[in-house]
Image (tube, rainbow, N blue to C red; front, side, top):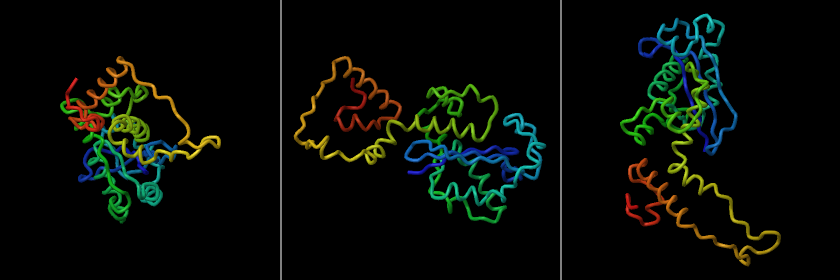
Length: 240
């Protein structure tokens, strides 16, 4: 499964009023593993940035003057995201800006190139209702080091989001995928048929069983009663 974690920086907050993308940062996940294949460009928006936006991302108009226009990197961007699922925090914001850039470049809508968009802000709100779910808040919640994030930057934020996304989905969403990717059991080991090999079975201690039960109840609470393992064990949700 190929996924692209994506973030943008813009001249302002309103694409409908003419604000433009000034930075795109992406990284590739293949079967939930970062590949090191990045896409990153600063872009000349052909307009000035709002003062408030500059305070957020720190990218000056002068810095962008000699950077390419979006239309000049559009083919490279499309080739990079083609066929992949996009993972974006507060996806409607970034998608609206990307759709505008594609339209100005006389290209097809985003959905024609990617396999779909997953909004991690929506996912976080479902997992943590009533809590702060900004990228910084999620980094703190999941133990992702963001101390080097003094300003917003598209590639840096994409890298942080990738870590947060993998942490958020490690328990539930990845279960089926990991089972599907499990290597086939070897028929023999060192020439000895596996069926003739007896493996020792170590039973869990009472302390280990109690700790396991506690972890399952934590997952049950975070997933709003959807813990797969409790259902498989036939346990009653919330039981101690």
